Image (cartoon, rainbow, N blue to C red; front, side):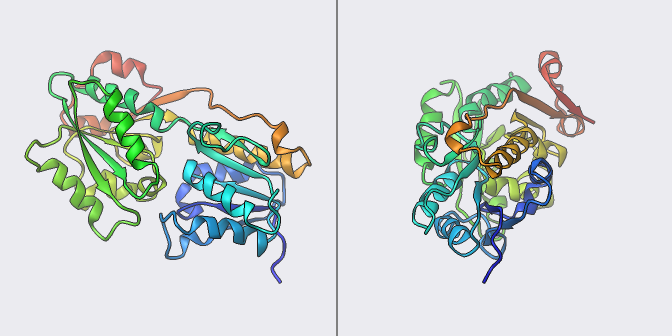
Length: 306
């Protein structure tokens, strides 16, 4: 019989791939909190269809007192549905990086957490790409995970709201990708009938887990400017990122879990909204691209990585 755990950690990849933000989450928990991650790190990386069953298993088999749904809306919805189908349907759930929790039916009863800013910032990221080299960037590739249930809606929204002068070309990657598939999708965007001049990488745990393949497809650095959601990409050699701090988000999630373990009801804990977005730029990557970034873009940066 498994020993009951305080926290069941639900994620489409492995917790270790989250790096500093997972460490921030653990460090924010009360001392001696026990954590059990789901099996996503064991041959099921970056697949979403198993998450409902995994959430149910965390409650039924491991008697988790709190389920943490990491990585966004899809994981949070899976946690909600899996817990509802379990023998303890009122088990509290704390989610991270969820776009529009209320609209996604994720802020009620036993759920609370961090309202992320992911897809809703893609328009701002497109504008930043334009600013990076305003004289030439009109053809932009959009790397996206087509296995996400809301992928068509997100794509339609982006096309409808983007600057009409931009031509957006989708780079479709399913989860999990076949070996070399991310490289091939990016190469197709670069070598298409109308080659892209910049790349927007949309928020998805798969791309975060496999960011080395996204930043350096096939082992070679991207020859064009690219923007990402999270600063981990920039630290690892990507050009720039714009989004909230994941360390801040996961610290808040750990604190929320601590409050629930201290017998505060989830419905009495308000949604956490990140306090700011940060623009991070890698100067070495800009130099390698031969990119003379406009002064206003450099001045706006919160962090410059040399």
